[in-house]
Amino acid sequence: MEFKEEHRRLIDLGEWPPVIQLCNQLKEELQCDFVGLAIQNEIGPDVRWHYAVGNLNEKYKRITVRFGKGIAGKVISSGSPMMMTDFPNHILGKMTDYPIALAEKLVSTYAVPIQFNAAPKGVLLVGKREKYSFIEDEQEKVKESAESLEQLLKEIVF
Image 1 (spheres, helix red, strand yellow):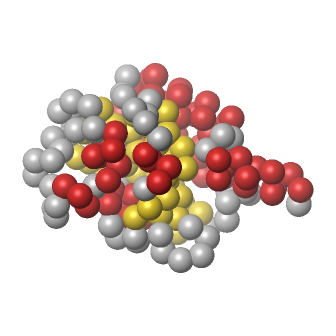
Image 2: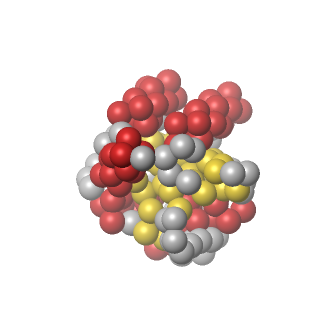
């Protein structure tokens, strides 16, 4: 029990080494600018960004979105991946509906759900600060990384 609580504290601080290592590896392999992990709160529908590598600032730590809002909320509510290739062009809604893209100056993103007990409860997002379309091999790599994160997090988060 104590082991689990210590890991939960590290997750809250965004400092759990296995997750950081996986995010760094994905960032390097895809040659992207940013990798972030958002997790839905245990109580309530809000979603918060817990981890980021390649971040420009610490704003991501203060971003909380409602279920169904923002990239993370939309991916969790739909249970499906989401790609943006030229933000803020061709988006649904307003620019302010995408706080992580604004805070990190992301132009292109690809985000996939992370499953806990067969339900989407988290999001793994990769992003570039230029116009880009993530190819199928890159999308598959993000999905594989999300599955690895599911294994790392399932004993600790939910």
